[in-house]
Amino acid sequence: MILPIMVFFKSTMAWLELLRWGGVPGIFLLAILMKQSSRKQCSLVADAPVSTGLASLGYTYVNIDDCWSRLTRDLKGQMIPDLKTFPSGIKALADYVHSKGLKLGVYSDAGAFTCQVRPGSLFHEKNDAELWASWGVDYLKYDNCFNLGLPPQKRHPPMRDALNTTGRTIFYALCEWGVDDPAKWAGKIGNSWRTTDDINDTWASMTTIADINDKWASYAGPGGWNDPDMFEVGNGGMNYHEYKGHFSIWALMKASLIIGCDVRNITAETLEILSNKEVIAVDQDPLGVQGRRVYASGSDGCEQIWAGPLSGNRLAVVLWNRCSKAATITAKWGAIGLESSIGVSVRDLWKHEVVLENTVGSFSARVDAHGCEMYILTPKRATLASI
Image 1 (tube, one colour):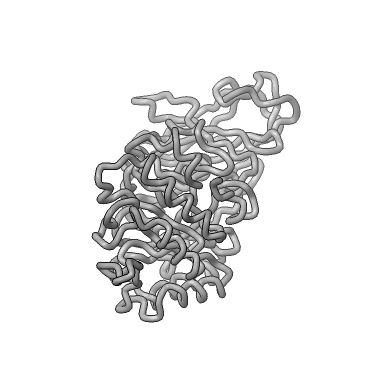
Image 2: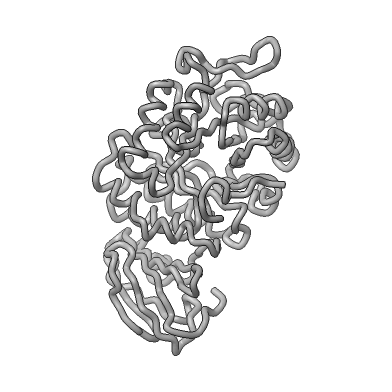
């Protein structure tokens, strides 16, 4: 059986994480991991979610990226931490992270080698899983490099079985880059699966990945989640409006919320975006239905409406302006799955206030270029139609 998500977060929803800044592509969680990472660096990053208040919002995982191990296994076939960067080993780091009330993850690969040519775990699943469990590891990100041409449907189940056999709850995150449409089969294997190639800190990359992940919305739900990769929020390649849209759409899609900037030096603006409790609550809503794009208009469909149902008969709506100029976007009830005669209250999740009471038929907002506005609609009566 796969590991239940609820053991990692109080709800059964997609979980929140913190990820490394910089480093090699394709990492998960609050990780500081690249070739230069060290026990000292990881310890400092583990302190940051506590001191910034992010941990109290649910960002509770600290993951080590590629290059934590030596270049080769020992004579017994075991992985060995690189003692130049982790002189006390991974167990000591795990103990430190756990003392902060956080969880620790490691990285490996469903291939002969990792992407940075360290030992992979293909054909070593049992020994590696037992080793990680003995260290107190709580999460595994499992990459796709040097896979010997073997199909992922054959490479990933052995690690699932090995992790479950340890008796320790370890979140299993598959990362085969969406090559073989993992949404169709990974739900029986892992807790999350990457649907796309690695994100980069550009508007083009972020919007493309959102569109790809949207394709697989119907396959996600409690226990198994589509993973569109981490946030680039705070890394400097996009502006405030673009980052706000990035965060809002990822939350609507019930994605893992993975911080990808240096949390030790986080700016007030970045912290404001990443710590929006109302947006996080949409991501963590117990209904567990991934929101999706429901309507597009304007040039090349750049004026978009994304929506998804929430518990309590509510509806989350994002008005996303992907045009190069500001635009007024109107959400009509038929497009977002509401009965035409129903009245709703409209709460703005970025202004943190109710902006409309008992409105019927539609509502509109002026949205900045490359910006978004996010709302929760609470019906006064009746039910949501199928979106």
